[in-house]
Image (cartoon, rainbow over all chains, first blue to last red; front, side):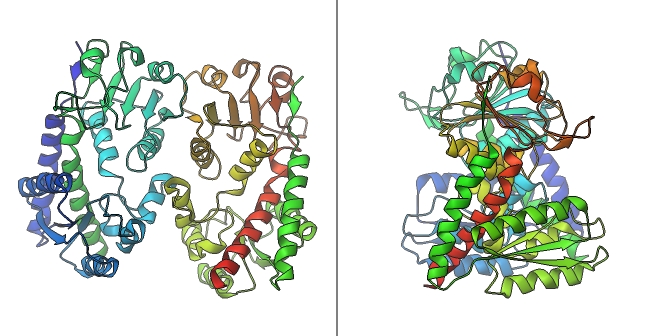
Length: 286
Length: 286
């Protein structure tokens, strides 16, 4: 039986850390605040927003949401983002994406100042992932996966890591972050041949391809740590990851469940980024 | 005996292509131009500058150099870069790096507009490598390695690629570019364990770690394509790559020599980026 890497446990530890940092800031007269911008009423957005609000409440971060109608104009959206840039009482901004297809998501993303870009949507934050020049924050989900390594004391240095999925919100950033942690990283995707053989070479296997059951027993071996980033609805209507948990869990050394794994940690990372953004601002102004 | 992937041959083909594009631009009254900014008199800089000037002459690109003294102030350097930004007759700017330690290289790099950043030194160009949002140009050396694949019809899709060296000017960009070409890429570095076993898994092996002899017979197998990006001075005083050519060449399917390999192609890519920057500008203004 594998060790279960509990998202709840990681989130709890992060929440405690963030709470303390919020207290210190409040003692200095600063109240860290997140502004969520939501366009339309997509259930996924509303659900993520609810989770983020709850985490902010738990940590003492102020949180407000700006809800825009689904047919909002690009100009109005940009105006709202620029208002957030100029509002000194807002330290982090989360624009829920994807936006409706009528809007230009890239130009909206880049309207935000990178100092408040707590989920890596601006070009400048993206460059920071590659350049190591210390600009911006990593995408929350990729950072959440790293939080499991930190919390459970899993040192990536010298290990072979395999990341399945090459998205800009997880796969590519996670590959770079693991490289910075001195892992030897292989990035796999839909065009990878013999995925199971490549996956078995991993000491750390991170899966984020958005399809249930991509990683089964044939992809794993004893001794591996498996981090499942997928969130899918299975044929039984229940939430499941990209990894066939029932097949894989008896074989590997440690694994994150779905639900209760990476997804449970993302909003804690978001909260940590907000408090960090607030601290950065405070340090610059003092 | 391996097929020799000739930098001279690749450079010749690129030069012909660039010449034709320059002709078309000149017919429309536009003369593509590169401005090289050199600080100090380092022999490596002067030698690269000479190669770039020669390539510009061969292709009909105008080239001028601004030479600044080694003790130039940051302000003066920034002023020169901003002048280049505003000068409509300059389409590409190459700042020879590394700069003397007295100067802030990152802020100097970011003073340049990304439209003229023909060697990927600004944060915006760096973000383009990761985001695929079509911003800026890739680093010339990484693009030169890709030019070998294009010229010799080597399709990376579905292949396993191993890149040795995780620099911002070659290893990381090349890994991303190969991923975009649908290769399954592993990025290796000084902390990689059992490098030779990892390297042998490659169909395409790209080596850019800056140490002669890192890749010997133990790292290769028949069927591989080896691209050697290193430029070192061997114990005999002669130029050599990171690959032990004498050991590796008899085993693999194809290999680039040093000298006469990737290094011979870099200035042709630089010229192509300048003409592309000029075309982009023309398309925007027409």
